[in-house]
Amino acid sequence: MGKLLLIAAILIGGWLLLRPRPKPVPRVGEAEARAVLGVGAGADEATIRAAHRRLVSAVHPDRGGSADLTRRINAARDVLLRR
Image (cartoon, rainbow, N blue to C red; front, side):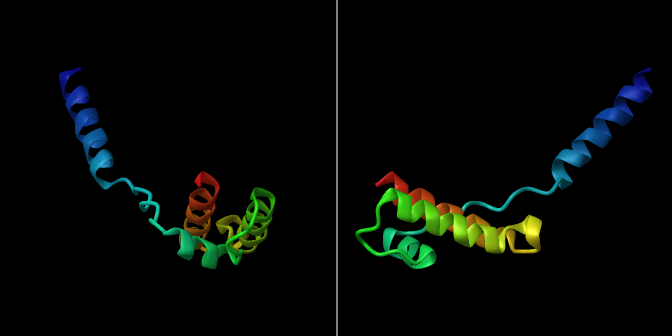
């Protein structure tokens, strides 16, 4: 029983060290966020959400797109909606 626990601990420890980790969310400024989403300075919440939805539907990883682009677009939306 002791050997089995030792083997399990080694396997779990190795998995924790080698597991894939998500990339950090990129930090974007407000001007860059507007450029990413393609909205102007006076864009309201509905316009920002519509631009986000349009872009994410085109580059989402489930549709063969890039996870990095999706992260960047989500970060831009978050920056603009927090103001």
